Length: 458
Image (cartoon, rainbow, N blue to C red; front, side):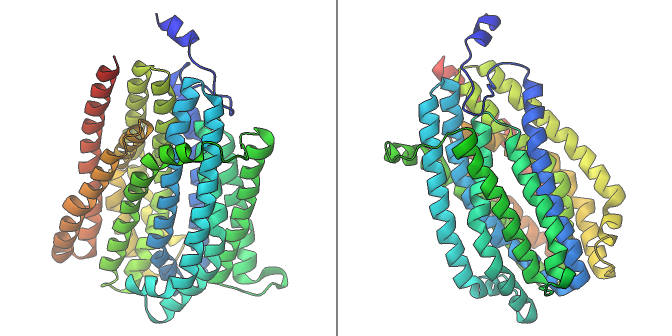
């Protein structure tokens, strides 16, 4: 029976891979491995950018920290479109409907291009009041607005490359997306110091130079993405045929996914606002430590990112046993890496911070963050895996409910209470506890929902 099911599995998508057959751990490792490579490269590039800016000044580091919520929010909304598109594309591939997969891909990329262009113009024209609302003021507000004025113009290129990478994975290519992200990150690291410090006779642009390095690097990623879709795989169909159906299917998951993804930057905005009551070294410490933590967090994010293609293709092929096995492997990998990451941060957190800055207050604030928050990374991975499985089945509401529950019911009350009792350390504790609680809830809810859906189909 198993052999017949394996042999009857549909062909892969235009990218070539079929996740409805073969070793599940191998598929997860391959999917995760290339994405972890890309995510790590991007995160390390951001960390190295923090090293560059640390040589310029603490105000520059604080200014970049203030951009986190807005940058994350724009990325979250863009990823929401990608999540919606990836879910229906993966199922189309699992069902063997390659024409529909190509049509959905075309319309998804067009939607992303339109959204990111509108968002970048809005951000460029309204940056000062947005960041003042977050608590930036004086010289730091001036630095933030000058940084965003350049960064915003690279966002459409970044958004298309980011969503394009996810669609490549849903279409069956786990390798090229990681190559795109890694190439752009390496370019950003290489050209950054030339623009920031004014090497080889260039003007020293400081924070604006970091933004320009981002724009140039993402331009390369955009070109590579266009090459994959238009030249290498010829997936794009320049036609409006079926546009309404495509948008309906994409946005059915995409709009709730946008709202779900926005909870994380909203949580970060609340954290920044709470930390703004403390000295700027605390905000800067949070910003730098967050980038260090993101390096190890990218592994669990890469693992959870494999959930959508694995669950989507296997569900489309009605391989329910492989759906549950895929989730089990992803949960186990996430928890195992979470433990390893926590140990790395406990042992090396202060040392990593000292490589970036010699500001004692900043190092103290950042070290405490790295001692507390990484403990919960495995559980953060669990809720991300659960959300990926929900979205792959076009069930976007549970992830939205989980995200709202985390922010409104769990995190905000704890952060306010713990901050009153233990200062900014209490905010870090609330962050870790919220991840643990929602990880367990997400796992149980997802298992129950998938079991009911499978029985309904059977």
